[in-house]
Length: 262
Image 1 (cartoon, rainbow, N blue to C red):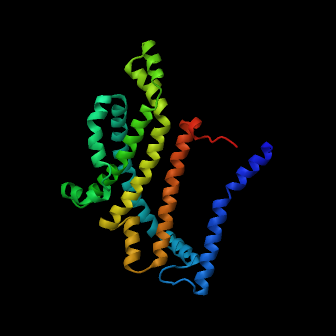
Image 2 (cartoon, helix red, strand yellow):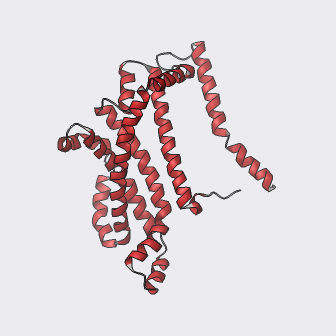
Image 3 (cartoon, helix red, strand yellow):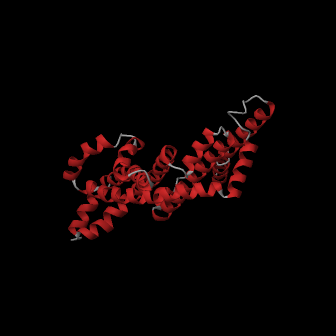
């Protein structure tokens, strides 16, 4: 097979998701118009899009998006930075890793939204509790990926750096950070997605504004079209966050992002 034919196959394969989504939407629209789908469960895509446009034009949807982002971004930073720092420590120190591994194994599986009542006892019912739960969600993916990124570095690099008399600072900046960067950035992407998920869940439970509260309002008022419209916004927000971090990863670690051609 020539390279031109191979490249054509790669390009063509990129259209498969768009084709599948288009077929699903057309089938959904046709079934809704023919009455094959119950209207109280499945609003047609045209009605959903119309509702989404109206909510955006009125500014109501933007208000909820802004409220959610003002929780996701601080929560991500407050969780990812300590997770990154502790991940470096656990990756470099076997003693610290052996001491904290049992605690990590015990706490990590707990659903982060389950600790919301406990957080509310300490921080009260307010923004601090929502951001705190979001930060806990971001902490663990960042910690685990950073630690894994350091541990997968070949020990020969540490030995060579030490033989050349590298200080601890140079060892960190010349060996540890570049060697672990791909997994660290993957952990940041995972942390961002989990933070968004937990933030939406917390808003459903205890918030008057935010995409999660908007989903709950749509359910309470049985506005199925608004429910689907809000879910589209949440999905788009998640795709945007992932694409932004993937761009960052491609800029900082292009050798890890590039896929070989077949």
